[in-house]
Image (cartoon, rainbow, N blue to C red; front, side, top):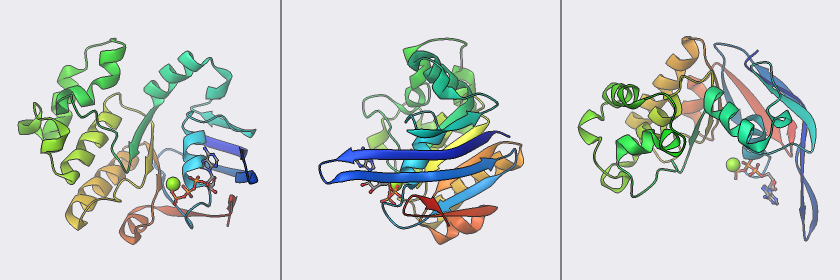
Length: 218
Ligand SMILES: Nc1ncnc2c1ncn2[C@@H]1O[C@H](COP(=O)(O)OP(=O)(O)OP(=O)(O)O)[C@@H](O)[C@H]1O
Ligand SMILES: [Mg+2]
């Protein structure tokens, strides 16, 4: 299994009392899986995705990615583990406005240089039809192009797992299809994709669905 969640629970404490955002969810994704997670606003999808990606420690249960629980590592070691195994794609892209496209893809490498991935980044840009854009800042790109940059960044280190929160939320049909085709191809090549989406086209592109209601699997 690439990703397993065992009895995952997250409780947020607020002024109005405790919110059981995720309440005892178990699931798993194997190589080749492309799963669309859906459910009403506030049902816990993003919270589950963040816990699954080693970005938010569960209050109960455990996450296993490639055989290891990331939360048993120190925060620094967990960040390295995420870099090695997981690519994230979010609705808001999270591109850095003052870096050009190429440096946005390489941003994690700029912070902690390891092997030189510059050539790989340029290959990905070509593959996504953005070769001519590599020295432009994100604000000069269309939203579809920005999302392709975000996907290229997620793929840079050949992750096994892609976690995507509304990756087509801002996109028109044509750009949605480009992103969904790449996610399908990534799964077919042996990866696993867990995608949160409200979009019917995106749900149709996935191989199976996972519905949440009030923090639980339906
Ligand atoms: N940091 C936080 N502090 C307090 N409550 C939170 C926090 N993050 C999320 N919640 C609450 O947990 C619940 C689940 O939130 P979550 O963001 O996971 O929902 P979602 O399914 O992703 O919704 P949407 O479709 O609107 O993105 C909501 O009631 C939300 O208000
Ligand atoms: Mg959300």
